[in-house]
Image: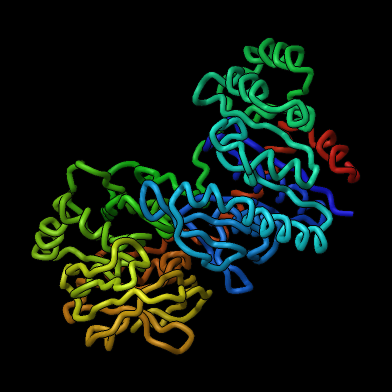
Length: 486
């Protein structure tokens, strides 16, 4: 019989995703048949699954930790925000439709069926399921019909561990306050606490841990240290820069669009020791750069208008006049063309928006999202690229006759005649070190052999997380909770 353990957090970004990935890796390394599960996720970073669906990026990372290909059952409800009040709803990997917050709240009873069905399907294939909550279980206004946290845990009758982030302060108030706001049955199902991101001497914390256990009657299973330099696929939070110390050899600037998606495309650049990567947010000065990258977007036309109001169109023209390079990925690629048309209002209000006009093509949003994992070569270098496509638009025009990449035997993207402007629908463009090397060489970075093998990096970081659990968490207690050998 499959066993499920759920990790919930006192807040968003308490470390739930990372802890689930660590637990999955630890169990998988011991030969346990384990899979991740997130009932409901709100994220603009997503991945294509082996069954042709779409799930949150962090759940796909957890699948990697288990040694599995991502599957739609692992994240049955994915919400991709399109505005402050509405989102695209994806059920078991497929687009269900667009809803505002109130409509979705009413829809949750129906969504629950998809959640339970997906969990049952996973439970039939794996011995252990490590589930991840969303946000906090103590959001009073969202408790009715909950499927993301305690509503799910109660429905499948699984134990819960509660994690709090001590780095942001107030961790004892977080943990005790969350417990106080739960129902009696939910408090009973909460088996213990985990303190995350601790810095300093543990001896100074131990009196507080003893008080917490006495106050609540629940054990503290461990205190996990703050891991310096940890970089793994994030849900939505955008890091401000890369890791370069000293003067960089290549400066890369990315506008932090309001609906930026799949910004993990740039993690290999963050890790590159000779590249300085900066995200530029609203009303911030646009700095000089060697390469500007327009990222993916869940609302291409709205984000294109935002670029204009923030002065990016003028800055890009100046950047190109001085010989800089420009790359657009997915929605950012669509922005490079002459126009983006959305007659059915798939990403917002129906209508059309002039593009930046830097490449001769136009894009039309059509129903039926393209979801596929792909491989191919960079044109004309011929070096291998791998990645995935997630987009609604269909692009047509003369510029596409000079593609940036060839994917599974077909042309994708475009490159301007002078080579300054490039674009593609391919996410993961920089993931392979050979492709990263070739692309950065186009932008003026010579001897780019320092490019990171991003896949190897991710596996190394997952092992680092599992090793941290071994050293700082009572894993024998966790194994007893799951009913498996320690």
